[in-house]
Image (cartoon, rainbow over the protein chains, first blue to last red):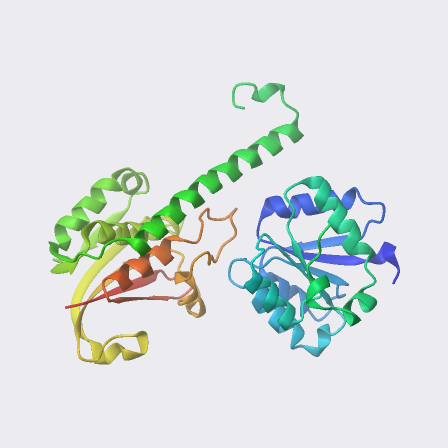
Length: 148
Length: 206
């Protein structure tokens, strides 16, 4: 994978979280392309546009207006078009139920939104450096939740 | 911040504004969560209460908002129902509050409250007991409405249909309403079409 062309899509309804995400990415050595959408309905509309160039990784917030992250994950994993799409859950929630459910539904990694900017940078650097193919083939419940 | 506003760089101003907005949201979230948990744990003591005087109370406590937004409330002569008065007041305040919040910008909000007696067997799909009669209280507004597919979802906690920038809120208000109606062994439904106002129906067993 050409890292300078890595394309990340963030679906998050919180404007502050979207902003911090972009700022953190801008400060990384490798700068992927970042697009953002504001909720799950916008996300699915984006991904199913006929002329769309699919992102490599979708960062998916769970609690969003209209359509939440879990519903999106379900739709993404039942559509063959998205078989190569990696999904990183990106949520404030650390509840076992959410972790379990998103694992079962086929998310590739679970990230709890960090509370400070430096941890956010570290986490994003880590995620961008993941070799997704390798990561996904060896995925289990122990390495599903990313901790820095 | 307002005091030294002119001496701050644009960046810092932006951050401070975000911090202030976030803390206000958090404050609201704590208030709403407390209110939600109180509703869930409150003692359920039903007493016969005149809804007309309850509605007067609601209008009084929302006087400022109603006047500021030029809201008209039209209501039938309402019945006496066995309710938990302070909870029922909050129920009406939340629903009327939503009607005002999600009003259209081009017309003044008009809220119509009607009341009728219905039989449970017509509403078993919604969870009614077919042996009981219900008082159906309908609150109709002329606001922005929502798509009918969300009619159930809006009563779930933290569910919202709009971004925080468009309409502020914590997604708890209607969850409180549902809880309150359930405390009365009733049920609540919503109907709407986007852009065409909304109707909230509160069913209380007689």
